[in-house]
Image 1 (spheres, rainbow, N blue to C red):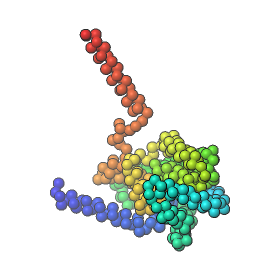
Image 2 (cartoon, rainbow, N blue to C red):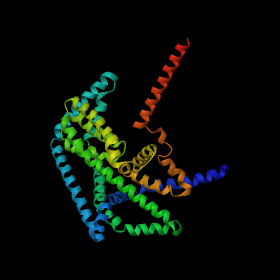
Image 3 (cartoon, one colour):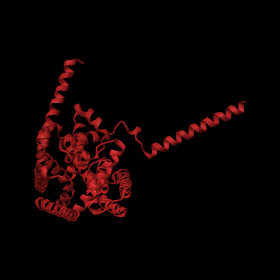
Image 4 (tube, rainbow, N blue to C red):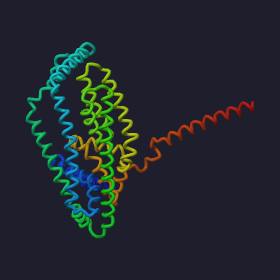
Length: 379
């Protein structure tokens, strides 16, 4: 193929991708609440659809569902805020404990590695406690977050109410000749994203109780608050449990007198990670996404770079939507194949593959023993 033609194709591919990334970065505050609204609409769609089938008008079905969802989140928010208020009451005591632990850590580093303790101690204390210089940024971020949260019911209502209109718009864009393919894509997207959102939400709710009970047994203060916070990170695949566990571990190191509790937190985090990835997610979420883990990790990193934590939360469902669309475009099916799990099944680590590996080892040993016996008899 001509090098000029290859360069032209690469240019046509790179420029749109670069333009999309720039748009995502520049319009971050507008787009990520919109993305959350789409995913929440998919999450609530089964309830709305059920009410509509029972004869409820669409507006009433949507309003009842949104009111129930808002009430649920308000109860959770009040519970978390109450625990945060209790935590804030003890913040001066935790500050003193944290400073003592930082001093002990810096003395250890200075004694063993020669790192000046005073410099690092001041840096850590300033970054942990000195929020005065960053109050304006914190206020702006909090204001933006509150506005995004308040807009979610509006976005969800509009997406659910106009969902038929959006579908017809999509069908008109693709044209009459591509309508059967477009309809199949819409149905697959609705099924995959809805099942994924319901499954992940169920897993997070289970982990809220599981984490809280475990941290309570460990003896950590504020187990309910920390259990809910660490469970919410499980919306992020692969890294969520680890991030939540690190948050709890840092809290235990800075506020507890004994390092035994921190060690228990590490063990408990590993147990939660194993349970979530090998028991809860496979049985509740299933394999709805069917995405290449490498693509998922790259997507999570890019989502974090573009939108921060919100980007990590919405990356996987939108990658699944992109994969469904690409596999129905002939010129893009190679990219859909790259994003999927096809072609790697024989290399997957499963119980059956482990059994087959053990059986092969046993058969080889048996063959070696038989050959040795045959050689001994020949002698």
